[in-house]
Amino acid sequence: MMHWKILAVLLCALVASTPGCRKKTAEQAADVASEGDVKSEKGEQDVQAPKSKKKGKKASKRAKKGNKKETAPPQAPATPPTPPSPQPLPQAPASPLPQAPTPPSSPAPLPAPPLPPPPVQIPITRLLSVADLNEYLEVKGWISYGAVPGMVPSEGFNSVIYRKPGESAFVSLLAWDFEQYAQALERWNELYATWPNAKEQDKLFTKLTFFSYRNQVSSLVFLEPDRSMVLAVSCHTQVCDDTKLLNIARSVFSKAR
Image (cartoon, rainbow, N blue to C red; front, side, top):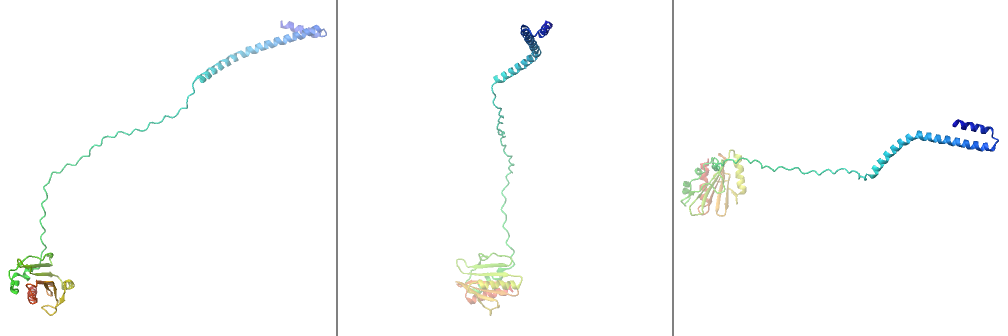
């Protein structure tokens, strides 16, 4: 069929002068071209058909995926989970501290014995005794009352006071004993500077002597140079005048040598 058409076209070309033939050949050429085009289109469709099928499958898959994506509800952006706040660890109940065992009750300590008095080297009652007072004083009945109140005896100091019971009159003796004469002289100067109404008496039984008085008490304070001793005799004016006081002081000075 195809060959016949081609021959007809060639014949028409030869007899181109004939109008009917020209029209016919033109129509035939158009038919041939259209048939070629149709075949070519069919061929192209036949060739391109598999591709369209494949593309159709891919498009359908994409459409399904798109539908799935469109149908799926929009999800909110994921927020990081808030970490739970740390819970306080359970504390074990405080166990009571072990108590030290109570020591057995011990008996109360006994009171410490009183300390012995310091050794006294000055035999104060030998320097002035009750016999001496009875000898130089008219009043009798003297009793030793120990050390002068407020004057604590020590190794280098001692004192004694005599009283008659029921009376305020008294006679007392204070004695300081030093190792060196310079120490005794320093003590005598201190007493001379501090005792009331002190007046030096350098013409008596020793040069270093002073007289002191206050209210109703008179005193003679003197230094014995050989023994480095300072002695002070005091007497109440009710029982002693100046002469009796001097006699008692001279007796003490002689016993101290």
